[in-house]
Length: 192
Image (cartoon, rainbow, N blue to C red; front, side, top):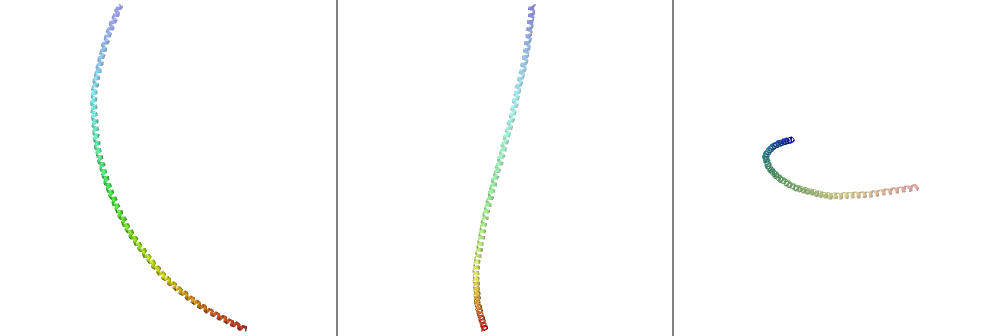
């Protein structure tokens, strides 16, 4: 009976183990199927991702090429504008140089005209000074002659007055002597 129970338990264990093995095999097959599906899906996704990435790279390359072409065009436009500006600057500089040269020439002409005018004014002033100097010399000579004549007249008047004074003094002295003689005579008469 114990052997029978043990044999029954062994048989049940064998059946349980067989059921467990079949269940594990079924689970493994299910897992393998899921793994295979996931692997296929990953493969498909990877291929789709590669195609999408390739398309994105193509778009990026297109944008880069477009921007590169635009940059080349912009650089060409900028270079042309810079060349135009440099040409205008050179033209303006040439025009300015021409204006400066013209102004310098005009200044030189003006300076020459001013120099000639100053020389003419100086010559005129020299002539006026020479005339005034000559006139002063003539006036001085005339003044000297007039002064000499005036001095001669004054000397004549002084001599004339001196002679008149001498005559007047002689007359006065004679009158005084006469008065003294009369006085002496009168005194002698009074004393006698």
